[in-house]
Length: 378
Ligand code: SF4
Image 1: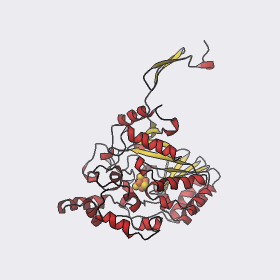
Image 2: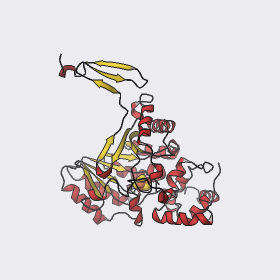
Image 3: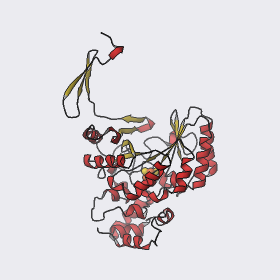
Image 4: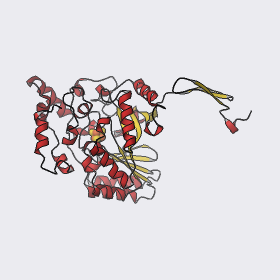
């Protein structure tokens, strides 16, 4: 497999044992114009465009995630997700915005999004191991990489404590598993101590882009805060590697369920075969496909957006062809903070008090008698 010289250099620079240390991976992230220029073999005339691009939307990629790229394929799906693309600053569809979900206007305290009555989302850092080019929080990349201070996290905890309707806290970012173990432990502990908080959830892409971060220490710490769920973010079957499988397994072994949300991305996974392989692969490693998201209308990501009907076609192609455990909910997160709307092909053609008429996944028509059952006596 062809690899640029810079990639070979990075791989060979790891001393024995270093490659599998998350700290080495994190401190050797590929970033900056010079590295990008070498990776993409940019001509002098292209360099200016990429300079503007990465000053608008930063980039960083772990050596591990970079190692998954097949450099001989110009359309490699891993490369598309992590290497900046000039279309991020040159291509825009009508209506796309920097914050289409209006997260900033649903923040009662900085960094804490309260959109649904029973749950909040805490953005605890703006730092990620690898910056996904399709990220819907690209607006936070303008600020230097930083985690929230203990005081800022404390203000979030106080808000949750004073709102008894909140039963679930989603800890997100950026990537919360980039935080120091001690501070994350403290934050989770403070939330757990609030009597009305029943469940904690962590949204992280670390198992996919920096799987060596899922250490025994981290797992033991997270396990102390159960019930705690981890929701990760695999988008392509090639991301299911021995390393990412082991990371998920470590979490599962300490009793932390792992689910996944995928974003439907043009040129990455907008095909039935890729989605089938991805969702079946996740089931094999015991990660439950939870959501398939229509790509949000976020400025800087429009080149990834597909026709919304493409996702419905894919769902139709999956339904009954693979087991229900492998099939996520396909949803669009509605603009203006309207919440999630599910989108499924419809199999119910008609219903009245006598019967419901269905089409099956393979095109037959089947009648179900008396749909009201005992609630609808003749
Ligand atoms: S890991 Fe999540 S928050 Fe970070 S860049 Fe990727 S999608 Fe965005």
